[in-house]
Image (cartoon, rainbow, N blue to C red; front, side, top):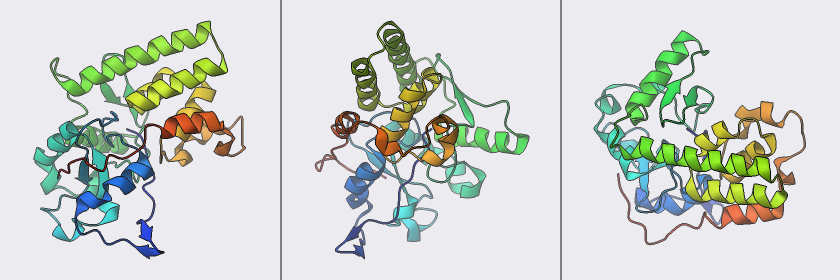
Length: 251
């Protein structure tokens, strides 16, 4: 799960926007954090959902609150929406991508499974387990689309790593980033390329809104600004971030 920075509420003529409907926040969210599910990480091709972190049925005052918005695919939005704990428990009982390091507490496997890291303290481990249950990321049914797509992403990422080992050129690196940005599943790519710091930096920098503060260990051999990434890489990432004004909106 990619940790993100949503940023402050968007403004118009230096005045914070008041959303008449939560769906109006979609283009702003896409520009800030990219057209990716905040939970499973897939690139959302159709009908992105404005995800209410705290359900509006629990607290109607947060229905139009920018700080209560994430993006979700239809699957993840539905799974979280029907989970009983979505209503009965507190937000503080879970980890959230806009507030926490939601990458380094989990491990990703080639099988499509996501597990809680064994090395983290017990109290954090329990909270992480509850997060997987609430979001449905611990589901592993053979016919379930979410782990299936993660397995597919792992296969593509593994082939891309093999290609890089055979041909370690700047062109190959750009192709790898282009593939990752177009497919999503950032956490899978970060796991497969865990020993390739240059690729990791590009994945962090070019998926919009990734919270870099959790990845200082990746930048430690190069303390210069992330703006050192080439204009070409940034441009090809931007090609996949144009919001579709015709998209429909969901809960």
